[in-house]
Length: 183
Length: 196
Image (cartoon, rainbow over all chains, first blue to last red; front, side, top):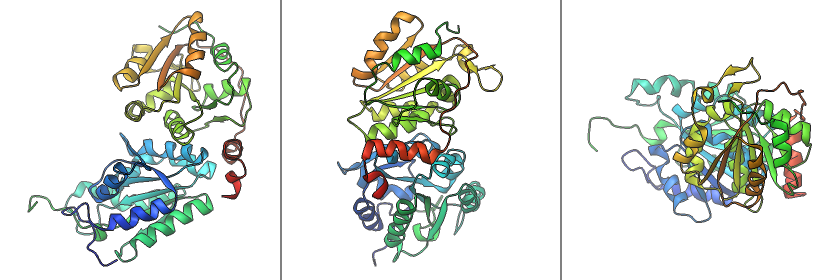
């Protein structure tokens, strides 16, 4: 994939098309999310797709249990959030670990590469450790050329091994958010 | 004002002739209540994930649109997931009902008062969130109508049932989550549950 990746200045960038295709081919039919700029393209594709149920959540924690229920009912899902939302999910992740319920989470990272906002740093830096501590398998995607394949690998890992999997979409990949500068 | 209804009698009445209804519960008393009445492949009592019962039911309802899904949970559990009322109000699942057995206490931890004991109105919250059918049940003669609604209404439905604080025997459901998961998936999906 040689197209430019999404950035906060170009939030509906081309990468979301390839990732969305991977999710569709992989059988995902439910996408839950608390919006993040980096996820905008995926969210808009889901909302425009009559075959995909797009559910906006009031907090990220809310997204774990419906994905679990959906899979018990035979449906695959993906949960989108920013790294700050991972902290909201911690106890609810017990459900996935205890019941060996698969789930793919796509986490857009903040608080790392070229971050401007100090308030994003603590949770962003803690995200891999927090996920790992709760039994989520953590993978990281830094390269736009492998992004779709990384998401595909995460989806397969989750649903083939009954595991919760988080693919962290790095801030370098997405582009740092610019504050106070050009729009 | 706490209620006088007997929680297990209410649940027993509501689950009479349940057919192929999926039943899930929050942690604690509603899980013990269900275990005292039923041990079906279509039962999924949660043992944790406090605040997630209604959303677990939402996921089941989305994946199984031809089935009725009923969530039984307590007032403490429901209060921990109030935001989920707003999400359910927006999604509008037609086949999802939530029954809050409201004894106005945290019954598992020493019967401390929950906010409903001070007047917080879970039915009002649900109504304000766009849950289309809501009711507060305080009288025995409302139960049969609620039972019918669990089977027939185009939901979502949220019912608050004001129940007494009672020392019911603790009847434990299976606690292996993988067993509960595989049992229900097999019942719903057949061999696909295991071989897909």
